[in-house]
Image (cartoon, rainbow, N blue to C red; front, top):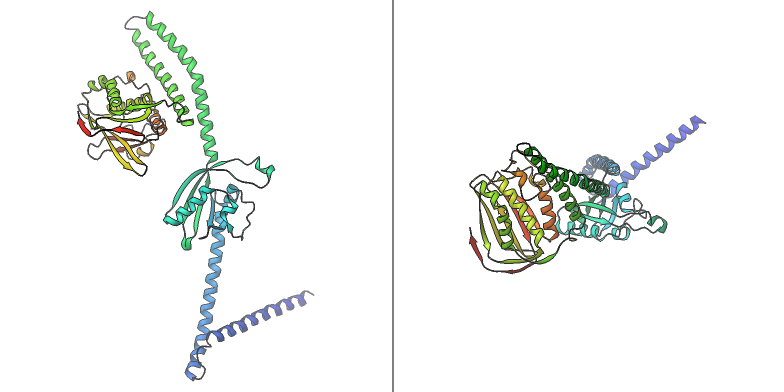
Length: 439
């Protein structure tokens, strides 16, 4: 029986091979049919071309098999990739997606091989808009948004949670678009848990620090020189810890609800900047530092005056710290036109060593101190008026206040002075008058 089965299989295989050869000859006859058979030379050409055509067809078949194998390999790699990937055609029909994308977007209704409109499967306006922009602009795009999955099963819907997604898209040939998806929700949850833990810790620290300060104040009244200098030093460090805790709590509150604490009113900016400088002027005079103002004589915006005062106290205090003695800090104000209308631009430029290139992307991150070569301890630093000197939170708080006002803040190095260049832009401009120069 085994021999009979083997012979039967061999016969079937030989028969299939013969059928392929007959089919190939028939195909070649049709391909060469346009060549007339009346000429003996053309007949010879047909006989010469037939083996060559068979060879070329065989090569094409092998190339097709190799391409198909490569495609399968790439699809398997994408299936095991930690990122989601999907691809749509020029009509936004879903052509293919990997397992991660199916899990992120809850694509239970889609099966491999189906071609359906992506918007029918995934109710996400942000994703659809990202694909359209990528196709129209023919440039890679990145977008972040909170995705709210839809599910037909009501029981499953209660367990489905929204997630924070980041999508990176790229244009492909023939109007197709590929999109990489990353679920950032775990990282966001981890950050929120970390901030919550730090905030709870900061709240717990306030009471013992206040108690320690009361004890130190009592000691100060009972000690005489030179013993009181050690208690003075202790008082300064305790105050620094109290300010650090308060600054952390303040920053966390602003990040969670940026507009919660804003008391909006009409604020005249030149007077506010002048007031901030006058507060810091005694410190600046120790280093023989001057300030020059150039720009608008009067410009008002709708803002929280105390918050903006805090912004310029921090920015000018930083400029004083890092400016060499007997130099000038320049403050410039002007009106600029943007896509969103007119904005007030304020530039604060010092003549220090500036920011290290590697530090520029991280300047506004909390607790980021940057290159130690740039940092030098200013005169009587512990008595600075900002209250958060050296904490690494000053610029982070400044950024949150500016964002809460709908503004933008940037850190650069000025091409002429080589020093730090902080640029702040505000909208909500109410009034302005012609520019003048002041020193």
